[in-house]
Image 1: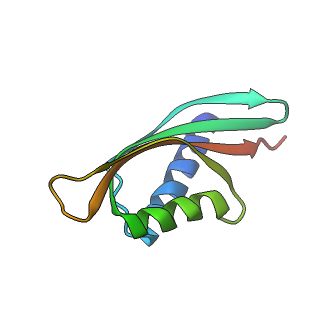
Image 2: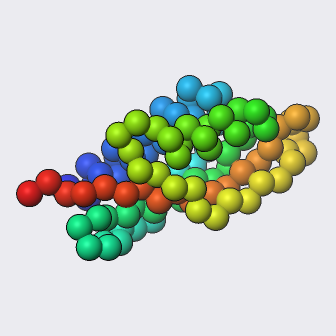
Length: 102
C-alpha cells in the first residue's frame, strides 16, 4: 500500500543517516500519519539508540538538514549508557513531512 511505502521510505532514510554517522538504532517504527492541509506528517518513534555525543550531534543535525527531506526531531530523551562508557542511550520521535503525488 502507499502508506507502507511511505513508512519504508522514511524508516530507511533515518537508518541510512544513522549508519553514516555511526549511530546504532535498535528500534524504529512508524507511529501514524497526520494531514495538515496538503502536507502529511509521519511520526517515527526511534528507541534504544546508542551513540557517542559527537555522533549523536552529527546525526541529529543531518536529520534536520538532509537534502530533499523535511524532518523535525520532536521529543528526545538522552541518558548515559551505563554499559558502554562514553556512549549515550537515546529515545526520540521524528516528524517526516511530505506531499502525496496526484
